[in-house]
Image (cartoon, rainbow, N blue to C red; front, side, top):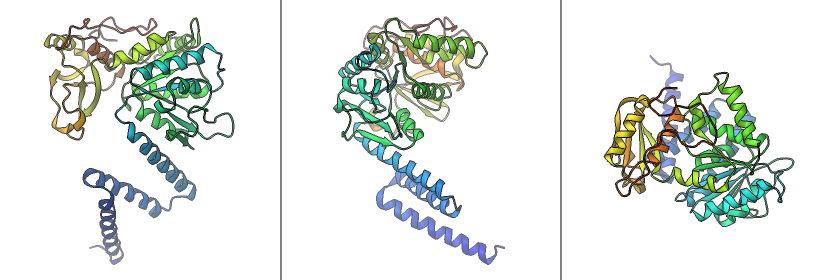
Length: 376
């Protein structure tokens, strides 16, 4: 039997649970209300755990930053966004500055918005090219160096963060492509963060373009380190090289982003199945070829073309798009990137494609297979 004290505590817990549900129901409904209730419950548990004041301040401020950022991005969910990273110290007459500004100008013409860290240098260049109306600034409060550039300063889409981790989380969850220009520790950190999350399947696969000036060697030296010291020691896989592209051309950088969304739209996971949304239906022959080339990637069954699954009913705006459904081994996301590249080069029912490709142009000679069917 429960003791009197334990029974009293359980009754109190039930009362608190009911009050939480009532509060959540006042501001939300359905699944949203359930999640609001969970957030409230977590906050109350911090008090019950007697968390330190320092921890409480950190959790509180992080939550406030995340909530505010989400409210700013909410009005722009219908537009894809490209994050541009690079040094805050790059001069306005540098080739890298001019490239970043031109890339941002060009990608905005294609309907994208631009996200930067909100500072000067490469960030300011991209903000100039995009214009304040088509860009966001995710600024970090620092005791030196970082301040909002004049293009985004005062704009409602400038968001100030106290923590790097909340800032980087917003970059990852809101961005549909990354373009990295030469930079320091911060640029390297942001680039490796994106690569790590995609390599491990913790974030969506999107294009990562490493843009250097003509005849520049910044990213080539970086690639040599990855190739010689990481791949050479068996610390990364050859297929990880599919996750990024190195170029010295703004034209190629723009084309890489646009090509990624030619046929591919987006994807989500439904239990063990990967559901790839398409802008156009593929021809049956194209699907057969994908199954042949990527058989080793599949953990079960085949790649099939279907309509939206019942589990996707919460995404009404894209329910009309055709799907490819597959059950892949979730251990090689570089190969999943290669699958997306092949989908984008496949023949569709509405037009003749250019034929499936075995391997995209990665801008370097990574030791990858000549076809997807070959094991690495």
